[in-house]
Length: 329
Image 1 (cartoon, rainbow, N blue to C red):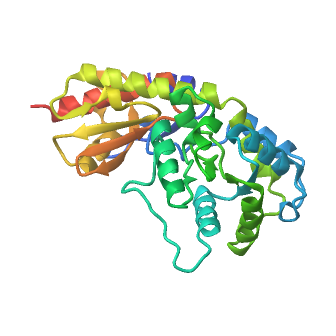
Image 2 (spheres, rainbow, N blue to C red):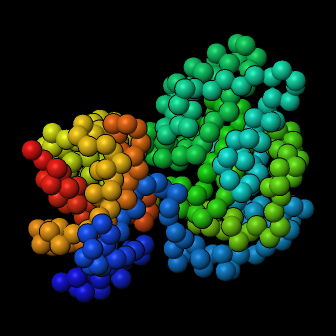
Image 3 (tube, rainbow, N blue to C red):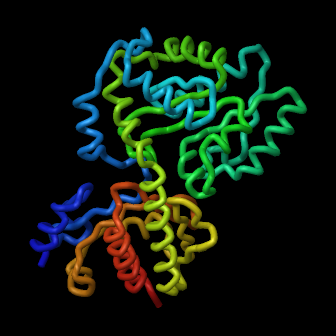
């Protein structure tokens, strides 16, 4: 049976098999990694794009693939220009440094500023308030495309209320590396200088920009599938009717699901979800390791992405059901 599962999984892109852990059984286990959408691996289309990318020295502005990406992204985001950088962290740092150049400048951050989704009206209100005080608004667009798909609006509709924006390619868009910072022409000219000062000037970066172009090509379809799989998990989780864990279906708007834990510590739950035992195989017919992240003292986070299929989602539900039955009263 397990050999049959392995053969079937080998035909599915993104499938990972490992030896089971935590039980000493040594069975071959199918791994579903829901820790973050940063764990995605470039598929055949991205690898082919990397191999075929036309490149030049991007530090001189001579990489045609990087230029293509920057131009397409600028239109998509509704900004004058964009600049390709190694990481979204650098994109945000460059933006802050561009906006806060005077000694004594202040930056205001929300209590939970590593944002999942910006609500469009909220951004507009913040922008109006900031304008009244002569301040500028930067949008951390780590998962901007997820927000746009969930809100059924073009990304530029969200960005229009902001003075600058970052866009990460290595999360839901599935690229291995890269981000953009976007804004007015003079802003990007200063961002170019700061990128160099921070060590972000790259040479033949087109091999990376090519993967970002692939990620942008069909982002709406891919991210919508991720959202649907996350919602399918949330609905199935409610059907488990566990007194130990619960999911607020109304809160599942994109590719993230927060599971409230009222029983064992989240770390213990995560360990059980990763372990594989002979009992699991006997009861469910599957050997599955589910990787999730302990988010708070009473919650676990699961994040869907392009390497997690609808079939994987069903396997995850079965694994949760098995673990919760083991922990049940």
